[in-house]
Image (cartoon, rainbow, N blue to C red):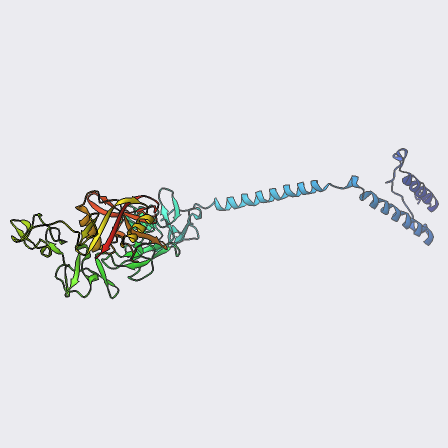
Length: 461
């Protein structure tokens, strides 16, 4: 063909281009490197063909060098940017698809008819289709009309308006009226609370059956017996002071002249003792039908009815007054009973010292130095007797008692635990106690042992 170039011409031109290419001169930009060469392959011998192959291979190697040059590479930040933009666009498209799918459903509200195929309950409101009606997802949720959604049921001590709002799986119900302290929380009206036969266990987070007599406890409301409010004393469920323990059951204490076998069975709030198998007043007392309890036999000059005067002192009731017999006279001298006039005869068996001002340790030392001990009233009856005696004395209050706190428990000096009914209040923390007069009655008040108070010593004959 007339337009074909000979091999010699092509080789010369390739050599020239290769030479210019290697110089990389600005003057060579006008050369047309991309000009196609028309070669007649039939005219080439093996040597000429090999030459051409090597020349084209040389151009490919130079292209690779140019391709690896940083001027021609895409920066890493650009790659990351374009990749991130692509992901955002992809997620946006996916969200649009989901919105279009779900928005196409007209979700149903509480108590609406549903079938889970064409009529769906609103999952955002914690609803699901139950027996053909939209209901809360499970029994621990309730429908709130004010919030128009299903809400998790209320826990113990939370406010409520109906039992359906309380966590019934924990045994709670909505108490419409307050019931005192169904501890650990104080019961108030419209509160999620445990039934009266149960208490809320903070560890198990549920209502549990109340404990019986003798069980370990931490507060009163853990203990219960049908119709008897037990108390937690020294961490044990115990009978209240009005009852006694009979075979792990609390039985009401016995009244005057009832058959008994021990003092614990008789009503000590009435100062009764078990004497000759009968609940009776002890020696030196009579039963006052007006006060409905035992009272000290009356002394000289006191108004009386029959059998109310202290016959051991030679007294009898005459003209409604306790007087001596006609052959005797009344003497208040007690030197034969007590050491001196600073001591007062008490129950014909002991002497009391009331006075001074010392701290608890000094008061105890004073009593011991006088062969006496600090005043104690371990039983309810002893406490009542002491109150009756002190009520007739002037300034007989704010007296140190033989009470101290041992291992977290308040005890009398003889080791007997102090009854909770003897305290002025339930809030006690100091280590010592004094006897105070409140509204005409006496009670124990916890005090710091370093305080100064009057001394009360008792010496038995």
